Length: 196
Image 1 (cartoon, rainbow, N blue to C red):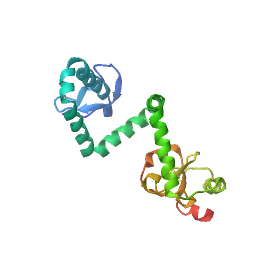
Image 2: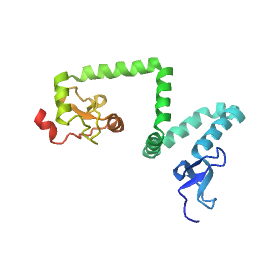
Image 3: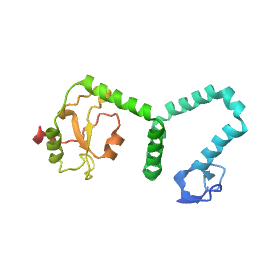
């Protein structure tokens, strides 16, 4: 098998894409499938819905179980792929999120209600002045990457029992805050000691 190229043209959509957008294939000389991941997924969805709906209806539970099992066994790999796609396609990701929010308004409100009630149950509070002093300590920059944007992040997430006290708060940009998720990560360093 020869060297893997940096890009390849999909035989379905005819677009030239990075090799990371193609599945591997030992059968092909370049080591990659001829259709990109997007086109292959589209084909699979179309096949299940159009050509074989009876099979899907009968085996829906086992198909879902297999997908759940795959995700459980490969969670980090799947999350990594999703993050990579989201970084490479920020506009498409924003559109997808906005569309979900628009079509799932009640679920979005329920998420917000649950978050607020958890925050209240965990206790703690901070004032606007304390938050602004913390932001000033970082010169208005993200504690992790130094971006010129700050959002409030709970070091110990509210979901995991973290309080809303200023001692459990750090300024992160949206990207760092979002990528941190519900993990306990403290990026404050020694700067915060001057404020508290």
